[in-house]
Image (cartoon, rainbow, N blue to C red):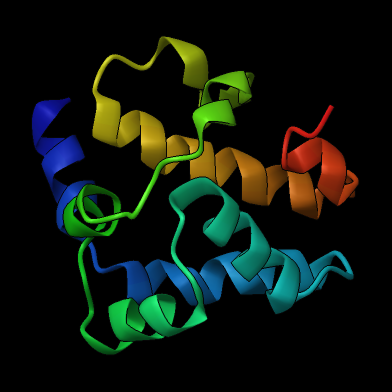
Length: 119
């Protein structure tokens, strides 16, 4: 299991980002919404995201250098890739799965205010 985590942590965010967009667009959602989710979760903005994509930053540094993980991220619950996100013990893997889960919710047609855990 650990080796698998390391492989994921070393993946460049830029290699996965187009897949998030593809997944969203297949379900009539947009890149703008994907970016909004990323900004909400990490505190990055457009300029910083572009730099991450250009520099092929890996997931470890993508989350490690994030300006601020959203305090409401702990409200993200449910199953992604067979794991309950709220029960994942490795903090970095949990953050990666939070993002996967939010993109999944977007693709499933959930309203943005629900995805962004607004009351």
